[in-house]
Length: 259
Image (cartoon, rainbow, N blue to C red; front, side, top):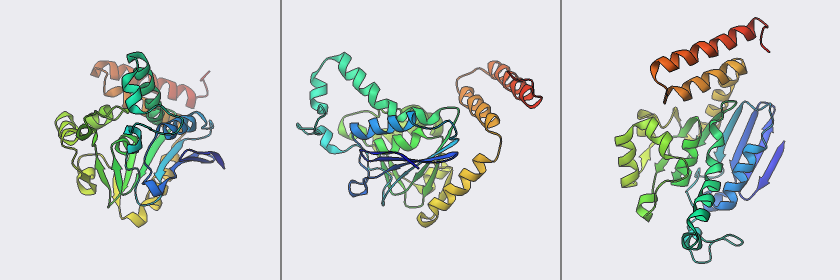
């Protein structure tokens, strides 16, 4: 069932699994403010039954990043150009970037697990969109790159935190500052990819992972995801407290004593 199909984004839902597809392969799924708003809307449209969200791109590339039209004086029709935004107030510029970031934030909600199926190019905003997801299954032709610094910019769509927490500060800095490509073998070795498969097997591998993710009880997965996300910032003793509280909730639920 399709719940959304607009501005280069299609959302379909099949009971517990939602699929968000980037649908502009002619432009290698280049991104725009309209696409970002559609992604935000997709997150808000998820039914409560959904447990796994798969993100994919049509065609040979996952997403080649921001559409360069954003940097032209005319920008996109009906949108302020990035140059016009830069000339505006600091408050407007900050609120506009915050709106763009919303498209990249909802993928790590504790009640869902998001899986990016990545093939071909995942550049800049495309790389950050893949990083927004909990897990990444990639084709052996994948090419990740963070090209913002080469344009005189920074990665500002939520990608710096998951990149650094995944590969470490030094490697994240090197990847971002050089803008070089990270290919499949390295992506798997440094943790950017959970699994690398031949391009023709990408959909089947994602389906197998989705089936495995749906096997345990939902509440147990939700509690575990929340614990693991919090573990990054909590001191060890605080994490032990969080574990006890989560386990107490699970035991009460299994005993039929939950509210």
